[in-house]
Amino acid sequence: MIPCLAMVRVGGHGRRALRLWLPLFLLWPLLLPFAMVLAVASLIAARTYGIAAAGVLRTAWQLASGSRGMRLEVDTPEVAFQVRFI
Amino acid sequence: MTDNRMHVLQMLAAGDVSAEEADRLIAALDKESAAPADRAAQAAVGNPRYLRIFVEEEQGVAGDGPTKVNIRVPLQLLRAGVRLASLIPDGAKDQINEALRKKGVPIDVTQLRPEDLDELVVHLADLTIDVEEKDTKVRIFAE
Image 1: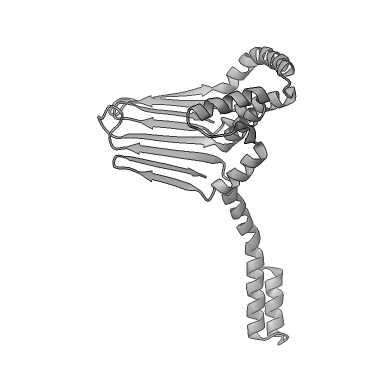
Image 2: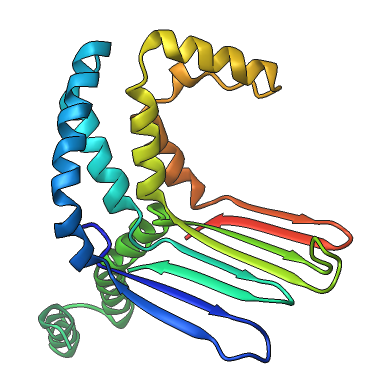
């Protein structure tokens, strides 16, 4: 399952934190036409270089869906930054 | 109380089995009922889902205070990355190997196979890397 939401939190110590919930599920339909073009280009490239085209598409999907659950937090004296894919 | 346990107690009450035998039977029933939960717990432990990396520095890069980094990477993403590596054409793999050797990284990308990674991921559950230096602590483990 591809990530549906991204949470970005930026805030400094002693400052008000900015928290953004980004609805990625709204973004995916918008990116679908680009994904189709990219898929066709990948298929052509895969055929040119002798790579299994189905494997390329499957791996691309797994990369997209594998990012769900990823979390990155950086906390420095100046700023605290957090990104989560949900 | 389960039916089996009740049956053992009835056998004890009827004098069909001694107290010691009933105790052994009940212990065996307890072990049997606990086994599925143990197996589930072992499966959960043996199949980690995330790679966790913690870095803690007493003084950050600018030297102005502590810095903490906490990263959680889904192992599914790593699996997909290895699958991606397995799609690289053979000619390109040789070039990558050569470039890695020049950089002092003796990794052969032709040996990267998804099935090997699955085995590695299972064994990652038992692995914890702790590095402690004067100002820096690094901890890497799978959960």
